[in-house]
Length: 121
Image (tube, rainbow, N blue to C red):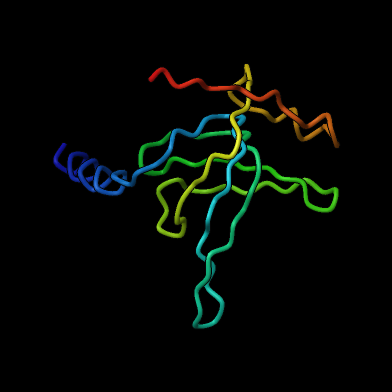
């Protein structure tokens, strides 16, 4: 039991990263650190979240984008130190937890309805 408690305490320290609320169907821009030789730069990756795997500090999201007519998916570890931040560009209105059906669609068929969020201030 002591080993499990030790692992949980280490995971809690890693999870302390401030994140926006990201959900399935959102269009996001992920800023990723890229190492080129001895230089480091930030590269944005923009796409739609089609899957999320909740596993504590090992939580991942799968982001899909279309590049030159080819679908590209990339899996990001949410609490990784290689990720600077997440910017939510659009909220998608979806009814499923996994949007794997988007893999079979092309062009305008891949668009999701936008969910409008109203602030109650």
